[in-house]
Length: 127
Image 1: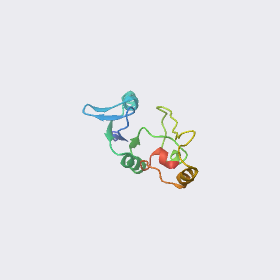
Image 2 (image 1 turned 60 degrees about the horizontal axis):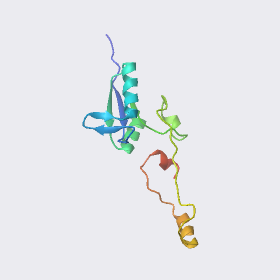
Image 3 (image 1 turned 90 degrees about the vertical axis):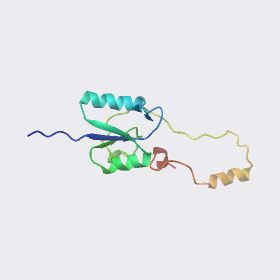
Image 4 (image 1 turned 180 degrees about the vertical axis):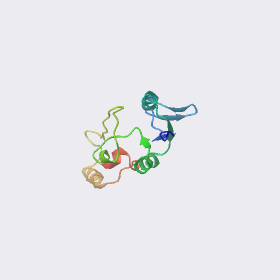
């Protein structure tokens, strides 16, 4: 009696140029790295593109489920088995050096604590 390994479910979001959901399938340079890695390791897998929040929660909850591309941070590190880096990036916020706003408006902007972002996305961990 032989046992086949279960198919690995790989989840991701549509995030050009890393991964893109097209009529021809999932493409993009991160997807190509994942696909080449799976082929080299001879692992049976499927890739499904979905919202970031859904992909992240499935990867946290379900066995035999992987997620890419995902930013590695202190809050996420203990929840996943990290295989390797695909790329590196720096997230920044920019403003004018000399704001065109009055001092009162500038002070008011400092009181604003809302910032738009995707749920569970790496930038939301620092907002």
